[in-house]
Image 1 (cartoon, one colour):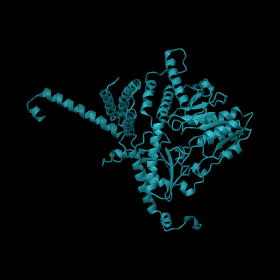
Image 2 (cartoon, one colour; image 1 turned 90 degrees about the vertical axis):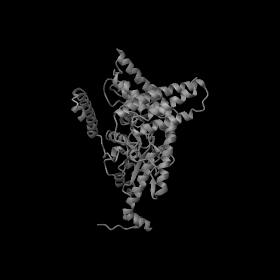
Image 3 (cartoon, chains in turn red, blue; image 1 turned 90 degrees about the horizontal axis):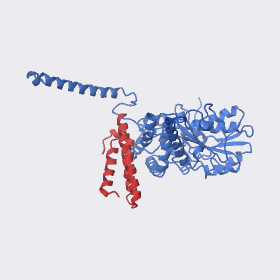
Length: 87
Length: 448
């Protein structure tokens, strides 16, 4: 069974890589979906299920790395709301 | 650098100079591609508009593209080639995709046929069934609020001598089951009614329609382009005989769709396209492996994410409406507020001209109706069918919320919308009269 730090590292890596999407909508979706998925799975105890989720997350991490790269290669202008300074 | 020159350190100077040159070339390259970006829609300072037109099309989900990429690059075999590995691997991918599509709607993979999109699927369903059973039955029923491709297919059939009933809808956009019941005759071969309307988002009572059609022995086709993957659909429990599916409405690629054709009891269709007999002869032509893979993947993802996406879209939809209704009066929602898909909100802002509002809201990609008819200034036939007044039909805007829409986008859109509606109304003499309590309907406008 994976340790707590290992899962936490995976979580952080997923969020870090998601930030690299240059497309605003994909970036915010990835971050939101990862957070929600980890929150929803916070209380699972079945070790087999946990391992399944971890391998799923690893696959997703690779996917995010590839697709973030694609989105960086074909960038567009920033969206109007990205240009508004955050208050 | 001058110092280097003075010291006559030519070699070091040269390397530095080349380095600098290379750098500036790289920057210029980057700069020029930025300038030559032909997809630029607005000035650099404005930024790209937000996308709130999820009914027209949706962005390709990065997870879908990731599944498609191998078939766009390495695995290019023809899925119908039976003699080599290139063909086999493509065929395996297409069959996996067929399974994914079938799973989403509770069908058997053999009942799924890949097409170029929902328009083709609708054509095959309507014309295909009508023509195949033409010797026995010559009557088709559809509704006035169907998509253009269904209505146009029906027009074509009318020219071939078929009788078509265009069922009217009630003011909430829903059909009346009693009227449908009355309209179905022993001569009716097909009833074609869409699941979710593309303009006003209303959900027809598919289950009841299916039951009625089964009892009356007419085939039931539903155009589910706006519904598949967004609301639970099951062809068995809903008694659906044919169903049209579109790829690009569910975060899949454009140019691909599918049609479900029931096998037990068997529904026969006459093929429209002649050719090599692929897809059981119903849709000849090589199946585009990457697109089919994309459609399959999009279906699988939307099946997994349906609950999550729906909850979120509902939340954003309520957020948008609450904000707008909180600050504006005389806003009318077109279509039934209960039997609806929350991602499609069609609002009429009274005393505001829709086109001016769309122009003012140029930093949000919105539409007044379907994309197919957005070039014309005519009010939508769907809004006319639900009995919307001419002036309100002219002031409608459709807000489309999807998987990738954010709270910030919804808030920005609502804010801009409120501001511009308020501004446009302040300029309107009609609005002034309404504020003074004049009922515009009682005014006798002089004729010139």
